[in-house]
Length: 158
Image 1: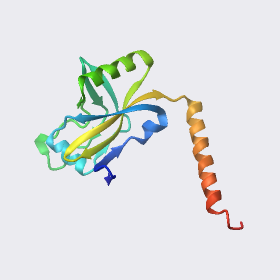
Image 2: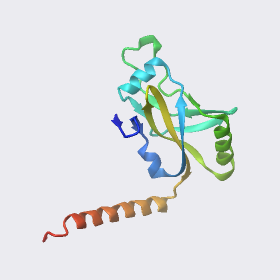
Image 3: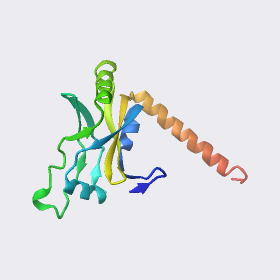
């Protein structure tokens, strides 16, 4: 877990989402968890890799978030891949529902973190990247690395 300036302790981040999607907007949502799931999160046993969110009856749910069972939790452990309800304002959910339904957006969990004693999930309103977009991003990253390397070694002879 890492702590940044705003007091957030990041538990896990979904780097694959930034590779596969263009992130247009981000939202912060609370997440409904059981006690043993929170203990597993404190141990860092979570994977956001293939997760996504969906809206059902005006409520928003995250699916595919794998929280490993707490080893000392025995009968209190829940299913690691169960759907988890997210806590957001109704007007935010309705806005997101309109965008997802009409403009081809997807709602993807980007990171999971502690904000004080609460667990929050950052979800992103994303559009999928095409293969040529991914290649373009990889080429740009490589060019940036080359420029950085050149500037670092500018005064030296090869």
